[in-house]
Length: 113
View 1 (cartoon, rainbow, N blue to C red):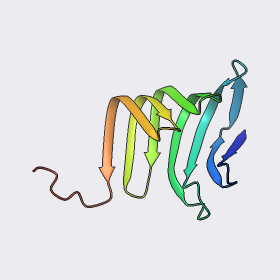
View 2 (spheres, helix red, strand yellow; view 1 turned 60 degrees about the horizontal axis):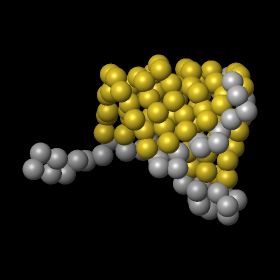
View 3 (cartoon, rainbow, N blue to C red; view 1 turned 90 degrees about the vertical axis):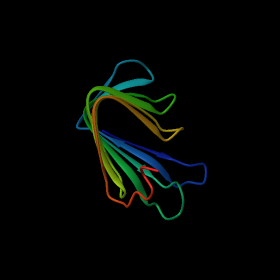
View 4 (spheres, helix red, strand yellow; view 1 turned 90 degrees about the horizontal axis):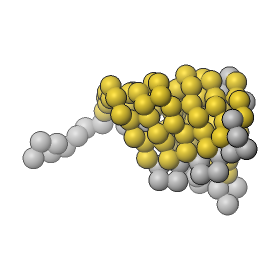
């Protein structure tokens, strides 16, 4: 299963992939082996982040995804894992409820001020 989405200007916004997809309703799918790639949305087509989860439910009408199990978020500046998650593409935000682990790949200046 592959579902790309584009900005109004025609640039990649995100690409949703999975090894298997099941339509639960007209606007809700369940994906096995979700790979959600988020792009910069401009001519550079730079990959901003990648979200990986063994199972996810994706609401196509509001570009949100969630899952009860594990999630991994990969960016140039961090690697994040956890469980019980929700991703909102419009807000570019992710919420993770359990077992969160973040590894920063950049310097955190004045973190403890």
